[in-house]
Image 1 (cartoon, rainbow, N blue to C red):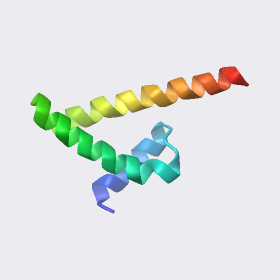
Image 2: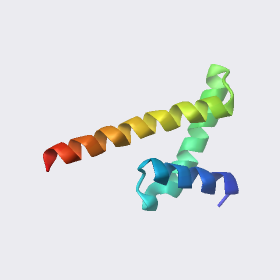
Image 3: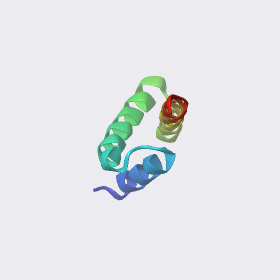
Length: 70
């Protein structure tokens, strides 16, 4: 795996992504960040940061719902 994708996968796990899904999600996230950067005239880093924040919010909401359901 690309070292950048390996680092991105590790970041995703730290944010709450299931480890077994992190490599595939990192590749998808990298691809989408590149698309957004091109479409919106942003830097890759800005697009990636935006997507990571969205994913983090989603995982936090999911964990909150799971905790309320217990």
